[in-house]
Amino acid sequence: MIKSSIYNGTVVHKRFKPKAHFFKYKIFSILIDLSELEILDKKIKFFSFNKFNLISFFEKDHGKRDGSSLINWVLEHLKKNNIKTEDIKIKLLCFPRILGYVFNPLSVFYIYDVNEQLISILYEVKNTFGEQHTYIFKNINNENLLKHSCSKKLYVSPFIEMDCNYRFKILKPADKILVIIDQYDQHGKILYASQDGQRVDFSSKEIIKAYLSHPIMTFKIIAAIHYEAFKLWIKGIKIVKKKIKIYNSVSIEN
Image (tube, rainbow, N blue to C red; front, top):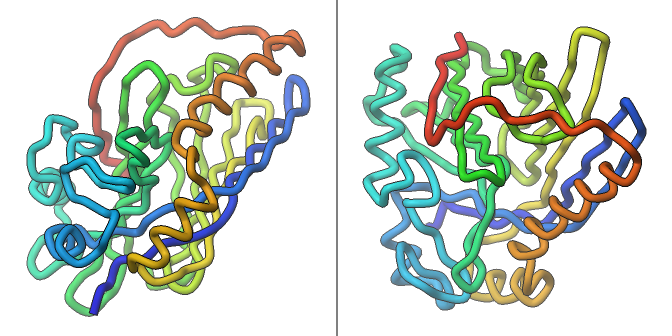
């Protein structure tokens, strides 16, 4: 039985200051059990692992981003955070490649122990400058809605200062997914962002349905980012210059 899933849902962004701004669009995402990638490659038509297809998943889009084992990358950083790595299961929520292209502003790794309890969450954040930072949290409770907070460590929006904090809220994946990020500066909330979704099976049929519903989704995401940035610039919001360049970085947040 395939444990990976597809989620049909929406992305919402709401900016509160210095000027209000809002957008919302429909998307689909995949929740991949990393141990199933070879199986999915063989069983699911129109989906491939590390190869071009209508819908595909490439290891080089995540982790070290050099095509090396994504599972090994996760294990390496779990060990650094003193999180047990025996008999764990790793699932990754992300956008897939569509016709060979993808941009993932946020990808989420869910780490489960042998008893199906969530023991760690990794938030992998990318910007449009080719940079990436991963925030690693150890999970010590069994609540359905998990909460994490940390300081911002990656320049993302050119309209938001670096001196900010993130507050993550994340629902354990089941029939629904929900990821919420509230961003604060010293004067209050700047931004609310969320991604939700309703689960369907990871099957050839649902892959085709998702594609036909969003045939240029991954291209639309990057286009929408620049379009919304242009509208913010038109509104007169000050651009914050990026001061440092990073490629891949990781922070242990416990």
